[in-house]
Length: 339
Ligand code: NDP
Ligand code: PYC
Image: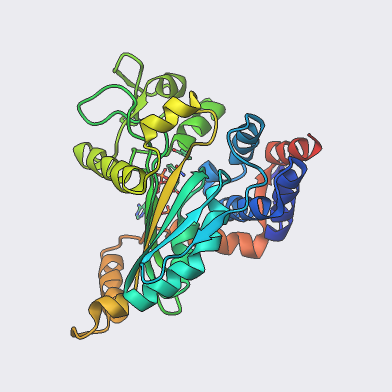
């Protein structure tokens, strides 16, 4: 491929971390952000890779996230709920702090929850479910965002793109993981289409007058649509209830009201659930992991692919050949490092 550079994964990580350190983020914040952004590029998830660095820096500059935050773990004896207060920093270091206690309690109780409050969140969720599957646990992660999605039957942004991700551990294989926005596509995809001057696929968005549009600018000024019509609309609402209201944190409309823009990363909370398949299936016939393998084989047997297969293939390529970046992307990294 011409005009591209293949960077070793560790080299991209170092560059991204250096950008954040130079921008005044402490080591805890910079390290966790560099890990998640580098993982996004490594797995060819462009909507949550290095493209997110500028928005993150804008959010820091606007004073909407604390660059030197140190998250705080709050454990209550006998409770299956582990809490981490992100102290107005990013969600990623708060997750890293809370995950060992979450895993311990999920193994002890069968089911445990990690509640992250007062965090800014911009990243993909699959790194978090993978952190749970690595421990032999199933995981379900969700968070609100800010109002950009019209509920089905409505025509104004209200719900967030509210991602939801699930992971199931597999012995000796990459886990079963899906991770998607509850809108037709992530907002990051709309922005990437705008930057590339490409029209959107039909059915992604409506303009400010409520008419269907394939123009990214009109979509950003209008509203995105939930995936699967009323079904995605209801699941997006569930995310607002469980990962916003239930955990005592902001909903997507409240985030937008506070932030006043969708050009900065949104502050809210996050809910992470961890399940022990052994504990749930104890006393019942069959090994849950072996039974899951049968199901995956049946899916693949029809010629269908499992979610995350594209991502794992990209990861294997990046591990073998490095992360391929365009000249414009390398320039962007150099420019951000020189700021
Ligand atoms: P996509 O629609 O691109 O993909 C969603 C999932 O579906 C992936 O797990 C993908 O696996 C899988 N998939 C895609 N095609 C197939 C297929 N043909 N067969 C089986 N599985 C398939 O994702 P979105 O645009 O909705 O979201 C992208 C990212 O944006 C997510 O990581 C999400 O967490 C993030 N996001 C974050 C938000 C936040 O507030 N922090 C808000 C919204 C989104 P594969 O990757 O292998 O293709
Ligand atoms: O891509 O929809 C999105 C998004 C919102 C916040 C972070 N990512």
